[in-house]
Image (cartoon, rainbow, N blue to C red; front, side, top):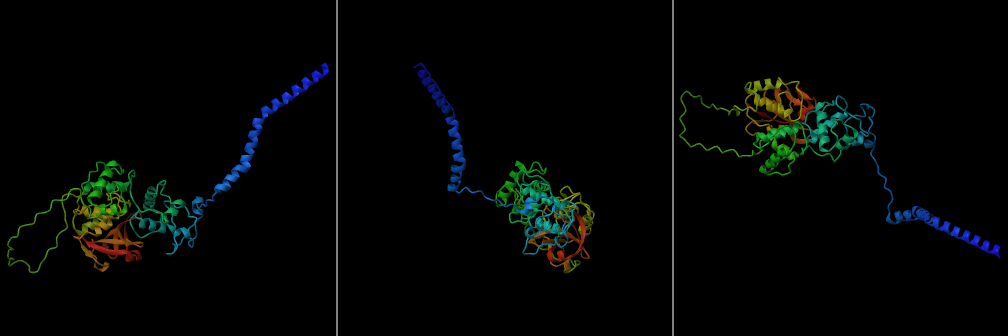
Length: 407
């Protein structure tokens, strides 16, 4: 009897132990089962119901392959046809930088000229300092690292429909900003610091200019604002006092010794102020002499001397040096001054006349120089990167617009 009771107690203890073990492992066991069911059944079913299928993203070869490509043969680097852009004929793009020479550089220069990042000029295959600086401006506008290197990503964007035209925004800095500041100051708009940084004071002056001239008030230098600032149509902050009309007086009779039929051409406006540029002469011959003295000086966008110039800056500096009081204008601005005689055709040009050009891709005046005669002219060349004397070429013949006679 006592043995049976001990056996019963032993069985009861074993049963309770088994129950205790089951209670300890049931929660982890149920959790593991739930994880397996969720991973292999619930999540796939959820993706199928919500149509959450992975999307495959394609990356263009030009953007994926950032290593320099081998230098192409001349057949590979020929300029693209009119119906096919460089993106279609040059993929992947080769990396180009200052000092390189390649046919595709002509396309890069032409595209930068078309978008307004550099003065128009006859493109060359040489990657010079002006091309490097223009690429930096392009990269600045598109919020890219300003390397001045024509890497594949920069070229792909440059030749695309998404490429934005040249503009200047608050926070930018450079010679172009300083040029805008100087011109606004020249027009009477308050710009305390003309240091090349587009800060609050510069933006306020620009807003005043845009309001006064009744154009879009954006506080940014868009292409239209840039064109107007550097033109004779730009309105100063304070309207000039109108000149009173002279009273009519009796016309004196001509003297018997006066030459019959003689007329005098009104002389160009000159004055004591020359914008800080010393006056060293007068007349067409001295204008040419001043410009020729700058040959070899570097081309720098929006600079007007004394050691570096862009095309209109050279003309401005030369005019001021011979006593012509004129504002700092662009090539287009100088080409529109109505008080200077317009000269049509190269056959009618005289040494000292200003000459103006368009580009192969635009009808807007975007380059200027000074006629020397004998089919030569002196100008600040963006493609050559310096002030130089050029002979008349097919490009000049295609893109010449007209001349202006100052003297």
